[in-house]
Image (tube, rainbow, N blue to C red; front, side, top):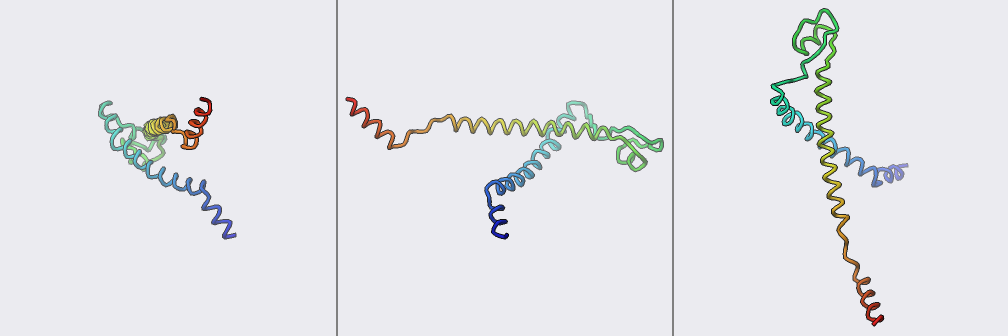
Length: 134
């Protein structure tokens, strides 16, 4: 049973998947920082400081606060601004990942498109064939 488990864990697909998940999590942190620390402040500056994260709809008459954190303490709220912010973040992250994958695909195509030189044996056989034809 332990040998079967070792074979399962050491199969290329499982190890590749584990590495992909770890790298993906680290890359997710980088992209999340790009979105929250670089792109969203620029978008906020362009839109005149518009920040959706504090927009909400009070579902209770007890809610009188103007900030989302305080409103949640007072009662039920529909935090639609947080949803809009997360949706914008998702679209930006998806766009960044799309561009990176597209760039990687172009690099792979360039490598695959470059024809490799034929092996020496094939070159020699071609030369012999050509000499025999003469």
